[in-house]
Image 1 (cartoon, helix red, strand yellow):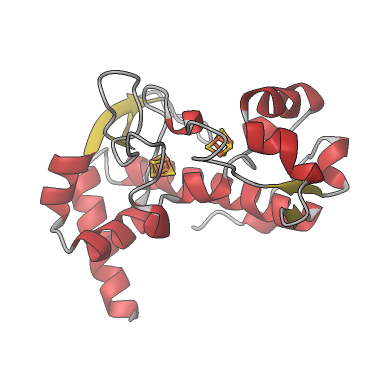
Image 2 (cartoon, rainbow, N blue to C red):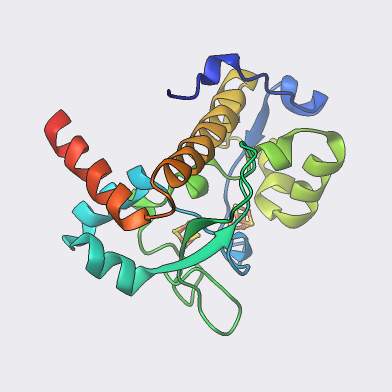
Length: 199
Ligand code: SF4
Ligand code: SF4
């Protein structure tokens, strides 16, 4: 059964409940450091579907060339085993996503993973003041966007939608990995076949 995200209550810190202007200001005024950090760029089935079309690659080749497989605990289910987690490969120097150029640009911007599209509006960043304050310290875009004329204004509804979508993606992945006993390749082949039939 699919997770019903309409049942999920999203709690936003008060500043975000009023909506907020936000913009990324890389590479001119930021080095792109939100794309750094070991094991931090998760990808899911729909991300992989987009990447395969973009790169015109097979699943096996894509996984071999661009993906690291880690093992993580479930957050949404009580499950006593670790499950596979697919993450974009990182550079050795600063654990930067390997799709980031030396100048801090994203080489795959048009098809970047959902996690990147939604940043910084993730549950861990939006749930309370302390969490959002950390984003503001970390991200120069969050610091200057409120004063920028052309920064997008994210309404509370937009922010909640992104947070819910993130929860949905995590939930679906965890459920699939439990159902498929961690065989992520078999699951992804099945997922991609079903997507082809939908078109
Ligand atoms: S830290 Fe903020 S400004 Fe810098 S690249 Fe990331 S989103 Fe953009
Ligand atoms: S895919 Fe692009 S936006 Fe996402 S972490 Fe990598 S370089 Fe950054």
